[in-house]
Length: 147
Image (tube, rainbow, N blue to C red; front, side, top):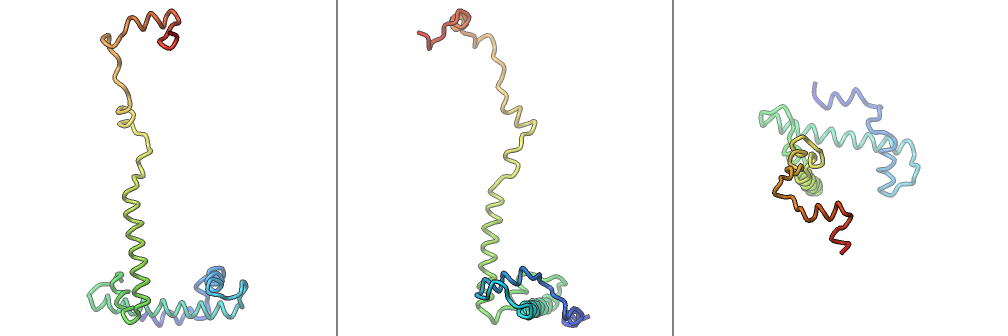
């Protein structure tokens, strides 16, 4: 079944939640509690827009011999709108920055493993490290700070 025909079955159903639509409307200058009809119209417009973009991207993917949509297919679908292409590019750049930051942060850095504990252990002191003078001062209650 064609993707556009599938959408026809869901007509009248809201695809986005009321709080999402309300926040979206309020951020673009609407009143805090917008009308129910306004939210329904916005939901329908956004749903149609996303459907059309995905349909164009799927056609591009089919022409390339793929069944899955890639970001390049979405770029191709938005090729006539420089504003959409710029927004897609901004989001991709932010994603790359976040991914590189995640790679730089070692998640296992603070976990203690057996090999880390062994590396932290000091080797036992041998007889060569003993200082007999210091041992006698400590046993008498004198240290170097008492002098």
